[in-house]
Amino acid sequence: MKRIITYGTFDLTHIGHINLLRRAKQMGDYLIVALSTDEFNATKGKHAIFPYEHRKEILESIRFVDLVIPEHNWEQKSQDVVNLQADIFVMGHDWEGKFDFLKSYCDVVYLPRTDDISTTEIKQIIKTI
Ligand code: C2G
Image (cartoon, rainbow, N blue to C red; front, side, top):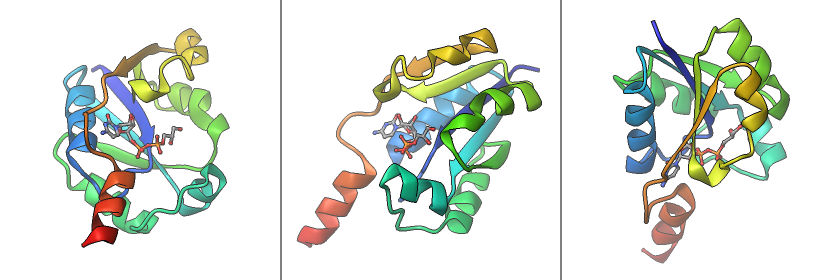
């Protein structure tokens, strides 16, 4: 069983997130999503509209996702990969190169982002309505 892990805020879940999750799952058999907590988002300078518990339940309702765990900090990834026996770490290519240190633990794959959609853009559009 090939185990995939990915990380993110996944706020205002949109097609860019779904495309990432689908392609990540297609690389293996079991997809783990480490979901940024509200507290960690604050350190990222991000304020999610949906609270962690809602973002978690939405992700758990997506058929590609098998497990959702909290992402509390930047440093937990290598431990997560080891503890959860992840074979592949996947992120969108806006993170290209940032997590190559994980190559000593697992494969690292950066997938093309979906164009013309982001949580930030959605927030901007809503403000103009
Ligand atoms: N994504 C994408 N296409 C988009 C928007 C997002 O492929 N149009 C991908 C991102 O590249 C990321 C994932 O969807 O792999 C989640 O995106 P965010 O929720 O914005 O995650 P981020 O805030 O970048 O947090 O430790 C890593 C961080 O937690 C990543």
